[in-house]
Image (cartoon, rainbow, N blue to C red; front, side):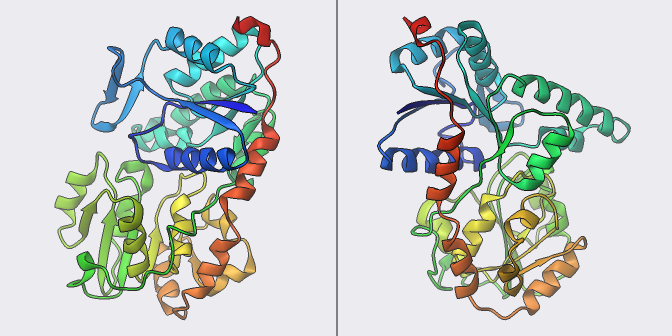
Length: 353
């Protein structure tokens, strides 16, 4: 089967959407499928970086190029991964030519935009975002969401055809490397680690304000990095890391702290598990879904008070094999099988000619 994926988030961006699509593409190719991802054309005159967020670029007016890409690849199935300009253009083309398509809900935009809105307009902003997203996904044959909590939330907001598409972790890359990691060599332990985007919606200040012994480390980049590094000079901001360097940074820490309340899943949680870390987080969508298994109680502490969650997690026995075994049950193969099961064939292939 030939599968075309349209995504406003794609390389060289580094985020959860991109990493999910990369892992899914690798698994699809292992299964003998042909896969093509159409992301923003960085050479286009209509491709711009988001203000104050240069890592994210969006291509406007991409319909003509996108149609050429679809015709040239002639896919059997088409999946729209994001709700940006490319996603909207792909949706319009599918409706115009009568092609069936699926979509995904990777980002909780209602919560994302509400966090940035003036206090008195947050509820209105969230309602407006749900309205727009519901319209975007309303013609999709399957709206893929990462957890049962997100599926329930979208269903409550009257989204149709919502299905589960879970996530996985690369247990070969993220593994038990040990505590020897040069950037940590002079840091006081325990080392509390956050990995992810450094931006408002990640609720990072809740982590940075914690009163704990040891050291706090932030790995990642984003629009709030400069402001937060100045406000919290005792925190070690190591910037963006990838590959084996990132994997070793996980393994060498003592505790992973996940302060976000707006993620749909949180791939970093499984990566931390694969590296053998204990975890502290809020009991919200993502953490409470991933760690619903009673086995997770030996290495995970969830609490509405993040300070208490961290204290409880640090009090748990340090047994790297427990989170490691948990991660090994969440390989990308099972998640990709879900993805394939939700795809639908294009209905009017002759329209591509």
